[in-house]
Image (cartoon, rainbow, N blue to C red):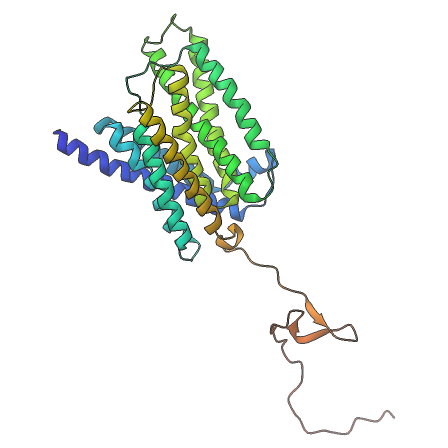
Length: 339
């Protein structure tokens, strides 16, 4: 395949990946809004019993597969920024599913988040190819990330939206660390891991950690969508590459492109993306209303005698008219007299 054809195929696959992730996010957000807010094993069992949840899992898997294949045919500098289109695609899809229009504030927030995310991806790539994490580094990263995820996911932040953003941050961290550990597992299977060769149980432990973080990231994103769609999705997409950049800079000797200017550009991009998340939070409608949930009906207005007032409510809105129980007019006849 020629380089031009490979680039075109990489772009198409990246768009398919973004669409798959967007559809999965919309399905998860609709499921979260329609499901009762409960935690624990009961919530997990109820979730696993829903076909909509498994459809979202399949869409996420399809998006991940398309992304991996796109990386095979195109460079990371092209494929990774196109993945940011997930947010742009999810906004109109979510609005269409909720039978509403995307607000101007949401579009502004999406564009700010997209610009910040593309800026972060553009400067956070390694200046030189980095090696994979060693086994001890992988275990240390997994332990530190698990502790941070526990803090973020159990925090009692006021408001559904703020709790959702905490879960979204934890979801992005889990997915980013799962990617880093996958790179380590690949190097271990190819016998290219730095240090001594890992034993079979160490390799199995890496695979178990990857599965745990990947599954945890998916479940945390499901919890995050209780607070809406756009803002949690933006935070997931931001925290994922941010966690990978922290691992690369701290442990793999990587640095931002363009040196000190790269650090400044990354800081500016982060501020723009944060502004976008704030706008998405302000412009998001009520998740229950977006899912088509019914609002509570006001109680009927009572009369002085205590009986409900016909055709009205306590707020003065016209209520449902009760069907008349009156009989049609008939010619009156004298009542029979008992003998």
